[in-house]
Length: 112
Image 1 (cartoon, helix red, strand yellow):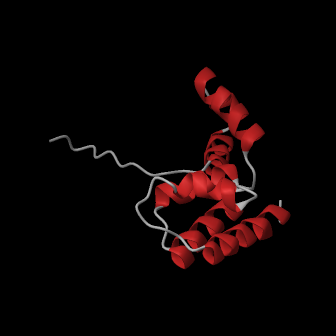
Image 2 (cartoon, helix red, strand yellow; image 1 turned 180 degrees about the vertical axis):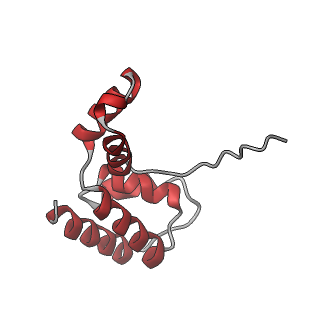
């Protein structure tokens, strides 16, 4: 087995943007620059807000990290849009919890 262990971490688009910006645009290759351009255009919140939001969604609503990353990336505005990200799971989430999730997303959306 190799001595260099590879780990995988789910990142939101804002976190990717922050990571690439920290490297400095002059140090990025063509693919990384295109990724930074994409992340800049499609980030709905900043990286700090995304991290806080992810933690709150996981803790309050017991969601999987993969679900939360997609929710933060798209920042759905309605319960119907939110259900798209949760439809793959086998659990049914009450409408009141979905409304609370939308309210939480709205709070972070206003901070941008």
